[in-house]
Image 1 (cartoon, rainbow, N blue to C red):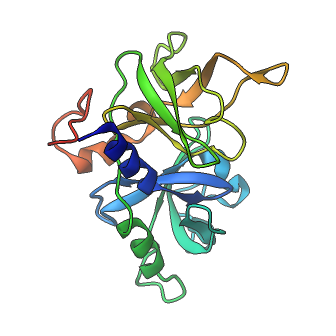
Image 2 (cartoon, helix red, strand yellow):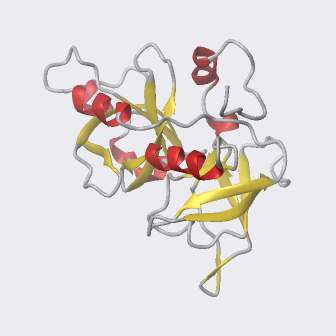
Length: 226
C-alpha cells in the first residue's frame, strides 16, 4: 500500500474528541468493535469517573465527540482513563439506557477507517496531522530517559504538535500508530527539536485492551497488507 494511502487511512480515523482530537482504533471489546483513543487532558477530568462503580451520569457526556472539525455533539462513554499517562478510551453508551443513544457514536466510528496500534522498538519515520490538514514528517523514538518505555519522543516536529493537536495519532510510515500527541516543548517560543513525554500506546493502554483484540502478544510492527 503506498504511503499516501496509509496516511489517508490514518487521516480518516481522526475525529474531534473533548477539547481537541482523538482517533478510531479497532478494539473488538465486548462492548464495541471500535473505540476512540484520545489524550486524557482533552476531557474534563472533574467529570470523569474515579471508581469502577461510578453511576452512568459520571461515565457519559452528551457532547464529547464528533467528526473532525465539527463541534462535539455525540454522546460517548469514558470507558478507560489514565490521567497520569494522559490516555483515555471512549466507547459507545449503553444502548439499554433510554436517554443515551449509541447510534450516533456507532455511525461516527463506522464511517471511518480504524488504525492499528503497534509497539515502537526503535527510532522511526513518523507523521503528524497538522491543524491546517497537512501531514508533517518527523521522527519518533523510544524515550531513553524512561526505562518503562511508557513514553516516546518526537524529533523534528513543529506544526503537528501545537495547541489543538492533542490526542492526534503519531503515525509510522507503515500506517500503524505508536503514540498520541500529549505535550509540547517550547524554548523562547520555538518548538524544541526533541519533544519528550508523548504516551507510548502499547505501554499505557490497559492489558485487557490488547488481550481482547488478539491472543498473541502485540507485534513490534504492523503489516498493512495482512
